[in-house]
Structure formats: structure tokens, C-alpha cells
Image 1 (tube, rainbow, N blue to C red):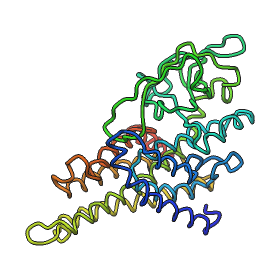
Image 2 (image 1 turned 180 degrees about the vertical axis):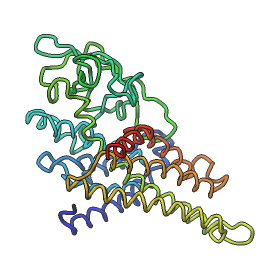
Image 3 (image 1 turned 120 degrees about the vertical axis):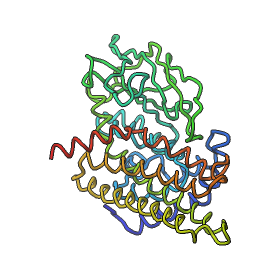
Image 4 (image 1 turned 90 degrees about the horizontal axis):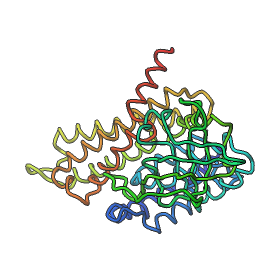
Length: 378
């Protein structure tokens, strides 16, 4: 649902300028140094992107899902590491607070998340709990009026600059119903952020393990009811999956642009590559998949706003768009030939970046299970 067409048009125009004038020019430096340039981070804050999904009353943009999807189609043209830095603020952490937090918890955390002063981390995955999140072993035990958290969380995005941790820990029996959510200040004694880990792609968005060593938190750190943590975390997955579908559509359009420019400028056998039938067919396949992902993201965003979106549909969008983005990256690198394989080229960076999108926020294998469940249930 677009509430104000003029406001959305202005928002998209500003996003295009941000992508073209700030984000894309900073990609090479971000990748080389594995650190987001300060001017890029400041620009993301200035555009309110840390609060895309946070209501205006807490300082966010308060967008509808269709408005968010439209914005992600534009922002998706820049390296996906940018989204990894700001999306967690308005995504997993904020959505759990909005869904189940007390008014005091919302007032404590959401304004800082919305403006990007605090960077949120979502602490769910562990060594033996990735796709099988219900198998996590980190614990939270009652101690007096508070809780004591212990465990090790893996692959935590933004961990080195965390300003807020949403920690999933076991408070009850084995299985999903024994897991609770805790909003934790990273300055709490007993929290140890490990050194940032080197990654294949998405450089500029730091990932590290977080160790909880008998970390004592107050009673009001618990978000929602005891045992509801995993349910709260999974409830927001449809929104995240539509975000990623729109991001991938934008990213595919960016890669196609890179391929088009190269195909028009590069000559082989006495004519531009673009005039070679095999190259034209390659670009056509890429364009068809990018358009399909765009249409899925927008149509299902409207369905979510209308309250008719089914989990299998969001999973299908994420599955198709992330798999298609990898196919497009492979084709466009092939089109570039040896030049595309060399470090420093845009397609080489994007090729590395795009691969993780089939893993994060639910692997392609998990998406297929969700889609199949929807098919079989009628």
C-alpha cells in the first residue's frame, strides 16, 4: 500500500541519488578495507534507513511493506553489505520489541535503533543451531530478580559495533518452546565480542562470535513471555524474506547494467559483444529473472499490507530471488570474461557478495520445505 504517492516518489528519488552519488562510489574502498566508510554510514543515517520498519512515534519512517519493497528495489543496486548494517535495526530486534516488548522496553531501545545511534545484533545462531534454531544451547537461568546468560553465538552480524543485542537463550525444556528473547546492553559484564571474521563477500558488514560468560541481566531484559522467543523471531521472517527478494531484484538490475555497459563497449570478432546472439540471449535471461523477482516482491508486499500473505509465498519469493541473483551474477561475470574475474571489478565484488543471500535468513533448502508445506496443505 502506497499511502502518499508524492512522498514515495521523493523518497525513491533521494534513494537513487544516495546509491549513485555515495554508496556505489564507496564500494571498492569498503571491500578493500572491510569497513564501511564513515560518509556512507552517515548518509544511511541521514536518510532514515536504520528505522525503515520502525513507527514514526519512535523516530522511524514507519513505511508500509509496499513502500519498503519499493525502496529496497532502489537500494538493492548498491552492495548488499550496506543493507546488512542498517536492516537489523528495523528488522529482527525492533520487530520483536514492537511485537512483544513493554512500553518501557520500546522507549528504551527503539529511538536509538531508529536513528542508527545504536546498532542492533540478532544473536540466534550457534555452532549446532543454524537452520535448526530450536537446537540452540545457550541458557538463561533465573537468579534472584534477574537472569544469567551463558553460551556462544556464531556469525553475529555487526557484533564489533553492537549497541544492542537481541539474544535467544534457553529458559526451559528442549525444543522451540523453551527459548526466550532478551534485550541486552552489550556493555553488560560477561559479554565478550570475539575478533571479526574474514568473509568471502559482504565486506564492510562485520561478523563475529559473541560469548556470554555468566552475563547477569535484569528481569526486564526478557522480551515477551518466557518461552516465546523463537516464536517471536520466526514471526517476522515473512517481512525479512520480502526485503531480500526486493534487494535481489535491485541487485540483479545493477549487475545487468554492468553487463550491458561491458557488452556495448567490448569488441570481439570485429563487432560489439552486444551483437553476439549468445550474449544477447544471456542478457535476456538475466532481465527476465530480474523482472520476475521485482514483480514477486511488489505483489507479495501488497499482500502483506492487506493481511493475505502466506508464509509459503514469502519463502517462494526469497527462494526464487536469491537463487536467480546468483545465476545472474554468474552469467554477467561470464560475459565479462577474464576482466570480470580480476579482483577490483564491480562484478567480481558483487559475485562474492550475492552468494550468502541463499544462506542468511533461511537457506534455500529451508525455503523449499516451507513452500512444499504450503503446497501440500492446500
